[in-house]
View 1 (cartoon, rainbow, N blue to C red):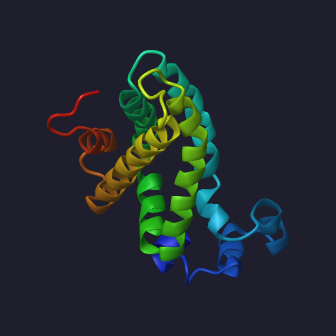
View 2: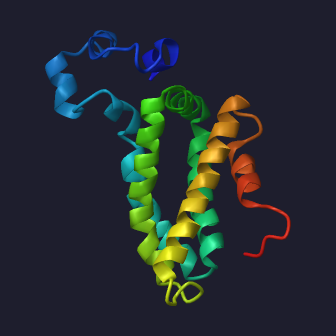
Length: 174
């Protein structure tokens, strides 16, 4: 990540990575199929871990509030390792290819979240899948906007406050 941040994702080669990590190319490719997987290795499985939180939150809250609380649960982990996550987000935001991959990650997360939102009593109806998809994609857009703002402001204020600001707007009803 340090190399991507310093040189840019596109200008960093796998050879640069293996030299810095003091590993062989074979070892690199044992763990990663290509270099963008280095950036997203922890991010893709995180959606699966958030599903349990979402299900628990849906038992007590509206779908929007459950999504907010679920994503807020990850905010504390981001804040605990803010330097790492600032670097990750700088790398992602600086690369068009990684921004597209980040969108793919959000679509994968949406596939995990939508069935649970669609089954909530507040959403069930003729357009439940559509309504659930819209809620999930809006929540993930809030997450993206908060991460981008937080990264551009170099980690201040705290990410949890920025995320809350993205979700909270005048006239909001949970």
